[in-house]
Image (cartoon, rainbow, N blue to C red; front, side, top):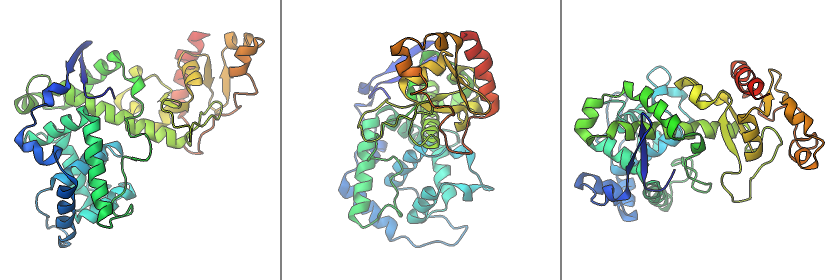
Length: 351
């Protein structure tokens, strides 16, 4: 994500909101945004002193520390996917965190829905915090580190308070290279239909809908990219290159088989519509020089095949580099309908 400046898009127009907009932090947000390690320690102590309540009884209001952790959970889960019938299918680390906070897991997803304005009956504080933390990732990561450090200081290890964001890895949002102005414009137009725009404008003012929806989209893209990279074991599906240990970012890209702009919303979030690749082979796949068939075998376009007598081309696309079948975990391969779309609309047209 591009630093503290937030770019929102609607009908192809770019609306910029600079860091100066957040210079004067509202009093209601100070307890969240100016939290010190001492504040976090005291809040963890309050949480540890809570009784475990019987089913049906509720703990008191969320502490600022808990709310920031719920914002962090957007990097791991989409709260709209979990409700009463499948709440037990939440990832284990989310359930562990809920147990430490002495709250039912559903209360965490409900707080997330309030933050992202999926439940518009809440006040302005939560979506305001959502936008502020989304807009200023450095501030969020600093707060998150403070909260995690305070937990470790009190002896709360990874099982009790898991590192949801992954501070030891690159904590920036993944997959953002697919989200250009045109893509964001398409998505904002589609998603904002589900947002109570009038209520949101009343809470946060003009332009709030576009800004909030953009952040939802960016977080969804991060979850998609994370799942794709995991499915490919953080290596290029075409050549096996793994940047692990190099300490560089952008060396592996998780992008869509069926192009992002042509997807329905559910297809954009489906990890089985993704392939992880190094930049060279990612670009070749995007422009139709490579494709993958229903048996997950890799094919070169005729024009590329004809150039393999060139030593440089052979160095990147020859048989000594490209593997025969896509390198991906069994059961996580791209779905046939996405591969067929790529073959028909990207690969064959390029050929």
